[in-house]
Length: 368
Image (cartoon, rainbow, N blue to C red; front, top):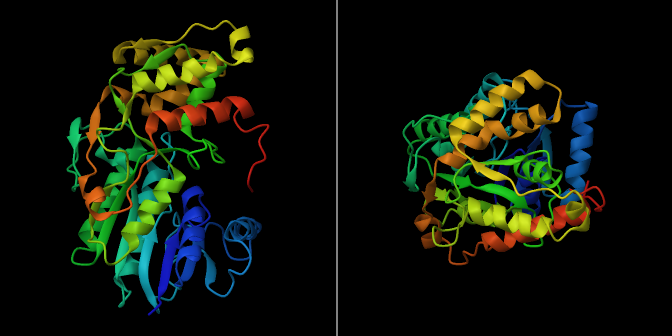
């Protein structure tokens, strides 16, 4: 018997891809929320972009509604009739997000979605899309379980941890799964990326010689994956036949790349590029935490300059590179017979080649 899947954040990078996958691989109806007020130009533009991703023939199974979760009450008028599964993917994901915005979008916004889910009398599964960064400042082995508060590097990390806590407490007794994602650095194994984030911005700083230090320790594990892998993981955990729980959708400990591997791979490939070689840049040196943040403070006197802008870009997440963690994904692998994660080193190489070849997408034919 078919039902309806509510997906929040369907206009987002991952949300739109997940909506397309659910449309292609099942026969459920989809109730998709996107930002913007009803009848506004923003809503219309976002809906049109989403419809292009979904492709022709989607109208019979798809309903798109406005719901900017930064504002209260936006789900009050949305019917729960027939809703069997809920995926909460909407979030502000910037490392430099301010506390108030993180609270409104990621914590209070999640509260609105859990209140909606609690009203669904046919609910078979609630999936909360979270992040490995909800682990905060903890170090060492990190297991697929509920976290206590260990302190956080930025407000984004705190807000995703607080949102997890709200989901697990409010929906206790209901079929809930939390999927924690790593940093997404490419659409798929090709290395192509249509929405760049802090990872890509940092690689650009290195390529153009605007950053000469590497914050962190060479041995710090770096968890990366593709949007394709993340979408497959979420779709798998949305299946009511898969046990509820907390899952790390990331490479296992035996496969994860470390900061040294990432850095060496990136600069080996940069140095194969003629434009990079002409600048005769030296490879950046690793910097201890105290010295790096001394430089961050010193750069504040150079507001508006390239050094200040580089430090502003990197500093919100750099402390994590001094806090090595090994994320275990035993629960995910036990429940996903088709588990296969892209090789991190190969993915870093493919993404670097694409970024350099297209000059960070400027010469690529981008999706809308």
